[in-house]
Length: 286
Ligand SMILES: [Zn+2]
Image (cartoon, rainbow, N blue to C red; front, side, top):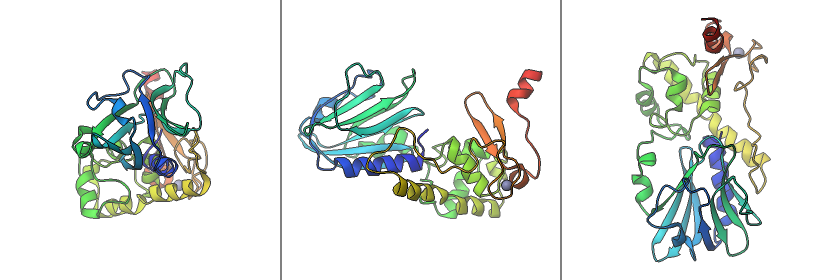
């Protein structure tokens, strides 16, 4: 699942690959993927890619040079989407294709989605409309670079468990399941602690842990070439590492499983030695 660091490297690589490229045509084979109709996708024809940016976990590709002025393609990759540049056009039979932006040099910017569900989406917006879009305007402060401590304290002051709170894009933007595990492990805080119960030191610990997102981006800058692969080399230390020794203290990393995700933590350093109940098991035993 692409989160802030993965989307950041994706946006950077697409920006360097495509800036200056001209659009020949654009189509949306995934009918439900394009969530806007005005301007139409065909408005991109003849426009030039001028760069990329990112809001939280959403990459944006920026275009200019048409009668519409500047247009931005805001993309949400959800859990299985990928935004990639290909040297050749997709086969029309490629069922993973959601949005295709064909360039005059033969290359293609492709929003693809793996699996059977169609959840990834794109919106083509006029200049200024991106910031006003509800998916962007409701975002909390960006998780990287870390917001100032008072802003972070305010964002986390909610009576909810830290793990879902960190994943709530309206509280803080850019974090998902895997990086929530990593941030809480870095901060030595329990994923089951409530945001509203955080002491000043706890907020400071999260503040100090958030740069792990920046370290991941640096890691990707080093190991990823011009093209972002389907599977990124994620520098994760605890996420999905249950049964393995904690890289810091050696205790066994534990997991709590939910229907669609899992939470990993070091019981020694994060939950005071307590191993949390596995909800999957306890449900079976009822
Ligand atoms: Zn540990």
